[in-house]
Amino acid sequence: MNSPPLSLTNPLSSRTLLALTEAMEHAFDASAWARLGAELEMPQLADPELRLQQSLRFGDDDYGYCVAQFVRHLEAERPADLRDLANRSEIKAWLDSNAPGAAQELGLGLDQRHATAPVESAPASTAVEHALMDAHHVLDSSEPVNCIHPSHDALHGYLFDVASQANLTVARDATVAELYWSLINGHPAFAAQTQPSPQVVHVLASLAAAVTALSTVRGDATTVDANQTTPEGPEAVLMADLVRTVFNYVRRRLEAVG
Image 1 (tube, rainbow, N blue to C red):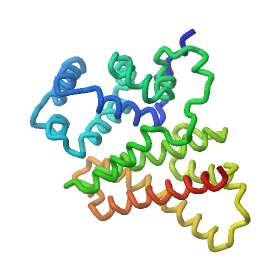
Image 2 (image 1 turned 90 degrees about the horizontal axis):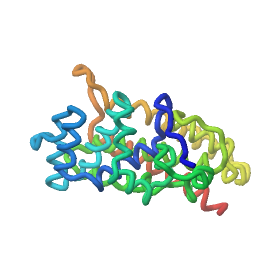
Image 3 (image 1 turned 45 degrees about the vertical axis):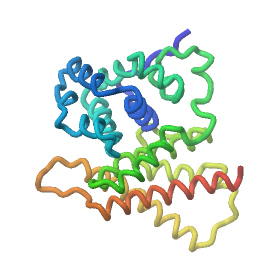
């Protein structure tokens, strides 16, 4: 029995969007992008002078960012096309082999035995870990601000996976800060630690406030209003450092009780 596809009214998880991005990075060449552009009536996907094709041709670090921007556009504006895209043979094959949890969420023909199994055997999916590494490489590029989206999405996907593995009730569209506090207040790894000192409590509260600000800065990076400014290089580096700090703290807390 095949698992039913996800309703178009339900947003895809950050983990699945990351997996789709990585699948397209691996499976699509210039010709595939050109064909897709013709199918979707998006000729810019085939334009050799625009950034997607340029970054692919020259092997630039921001190619993954360009693909992620395309995936986010489809998710926001054309979700049916995004789910149709996941059914392409090359994308489906990559997801089945490398991101079975994403394939399950997309309803790509996994049998019921797999549909009832845990989505991941470990809290961090391969797609999330790769996104963190990609964000680090983008910091060395000419446009380090491009690391903001993948950094945020990677952290969101990681925290969501950790919470799900612990059977915590979290909304798929929960913010990074909400996911973070769900772990602090309900995950066994955090409950197992000895009573923290007031100083540690203060640090954790400050860290949560910084994580909340992370979502705001991420929104600033997508602004299209010419009168508004996007974060600059130093702020992008700060963003990546914050993501890495939260990620490492949660990971080490899990390892401490593992």
